[in-house]
Amino acid sequence: MNKRIKALWIDALKSGDFKQGKGRLKALDGDGEVAYCCLGVLCEIASQEDQGSFSDKHGLSKDVYFFNTGEDVYTTSFPEPNTLEWAGLANSDAWNLVDLNDGGGKTFEDIADVITNL
Image (tube, rainbow, N blue to C red; front, side):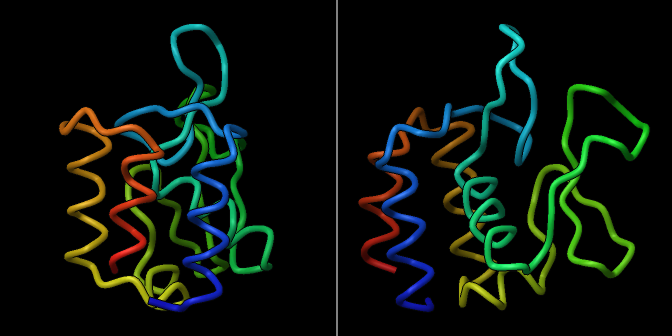
């Protein structure tokens, strides 16, 4: 994995700035607050690095944000392949992190510790 992106991602996950959610990269939770999957936090970093952007204007749901990297592909639950490539994150590692986030009951802090070893 790209060392610089990894460090940014770990710092972001540990920062407390992102509320953890499940099932979507970025969505409004039951309280109406924005929540992220661990990979959604990575997509926010990609957005800050001009590698894509989130939008809530795609029309399918006002509660779900869509991530796009300019290839007219909008995704809500898993990053596009070029986002994973930019981060140097293997597809299999990304899916393992989804499992930890969505079904494994792991916190962002726990997930950051796993990312440290990628």
